[in-house]
Image (cartoon, rainbow, N blue to C red; front, side):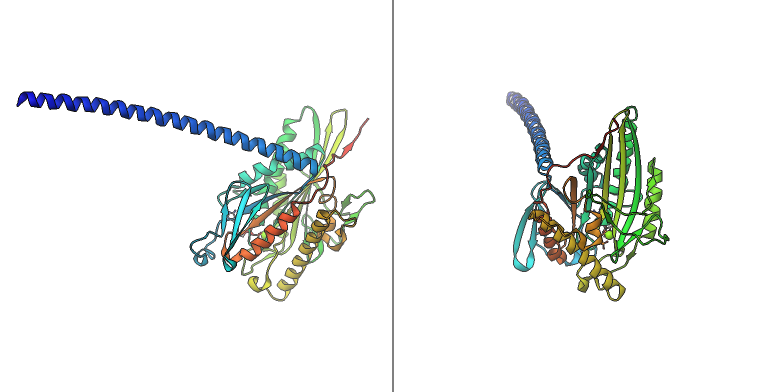
Amino acid sequence: MREQQQHIRAEVTDIGSTFKQEIQKLFQTMEKMADRSRALEQKYKMAMEDRKKLHNMVLDLKGNIRVFVRVRPINSKEKPHEPEGEPTINFKDDINIGVYDGQHSRRKFFEFDQVFPPTTSQIQVFEEAKPLATSTLDGYNVCIFAYGQTGSGKTHTMTGTGEDPGLNTRVLRELFRIRDERRNEYDIQISIAITEIYNEAIRDLLNPDGKDKLDVRINPDGTCGVPGLTETPVSNVDDVLKCIGDASKNRATSTTDMNEQSSRSHSIVTVRTKCTLKGSDTYIGKIHLIDLAGSENTNKSGVTGQGMKEAQNINKSLSALGDVIQSLVGKSSHTPYRNSKLTMMLKDSLGGDSKTLMIVCVSPAQFNVTESLSALNFASRARNVELGKAKRNVASNN
Ligand SMILES: Nc1ncnc2c1ncn2[C@@H]1O[C@H](COP(=O)(O)OP(=O)(O)OP(=O)(O)O)[C@@H](O)[C@H]1O
Ligand SMILES: [Mg+2]
């Protein structure tokens, strides 16, 4: 009996140590696999980075309008109506997006330069836009505009909130950071102007009580500007925040059925930079940061009276923007910039010599799928625009 017990104990101990060895082997194999997967992930990331760099070089050479898409989180009004099953929006990777149209049981796929899912932070959006924005300091004309249906997240993307600001503040903060970094070699001056286009009239949001009627002047050399517009020199982020705060108090907004704080005008923050390499050339750059008023279906937004007039003006100028883009895609000899104040203001930033980024904001809800498809179709066309290689504006001091 005792012998039997000893035998069993020995067998159990044996099994135990074999088991331990096997577990150890398993752990080692798992660790190796995890290492391999980390290495592969790293390689994939590097390949994606390389792809992005090459892609950006091609875009720079051809002068394409870059297009990013940002899908906002679903809101509490939309959520209860969202059908089960097929998700309205799906993401294959960071450049491909699919949109499911429930009425026609059809999914359409689009490719853009960057696609941001609803979890994307303001910082992540900024990081992707940063290289383009900061090329202003090298003497380029840059234009970043948020486009999309009402309530899709344009103001959130461009202005954001005090605690979590959008592109406007982050771009300016970055310009100051670079100014400080280049302090020994360059003198850099930065100024800001903030305008809105409301019912086809230009308003100076840094001087809302100004008596002069403002208009866009297109100069013989193709550049454009608004004579009489307030341009405030800014030397730090606090100066900028003050300007942006003053301006947003003066901006026309109202509540519609689609958005509690709907922008009823196009807002344009224009930053001019003068960057002088000490004792040498000066690079003159300009960046327009634009929060467009949203295109809207007046049946859905429920506007009447003044609201209806605003909506008509908004839709008219957006359609003028569409015509300009269409004409640039077709490389036609005449581009109809003069059809709206918006396109006139953007003439030297939406045509040759400039770098343009369009951020299309999209709602994730089936309720808005028609508008989402229309915005993405427009953006796909815009992505085909080839402006030619952007040029730096250099004023030689020699
Ligand atoms: N990415 C996001 N994350 C969290 N909330 C968002 C996001 N995008 C938009 N929102 C919220 O959705 C609402 C509508 O957004 P926003 O006002 O930016 O729309 P809009 O496109 O500017 O509309 P309009 O054309 O009517 O001015 C706001 O309450 C905003 O805070
Ligand atoms: Mg808005």
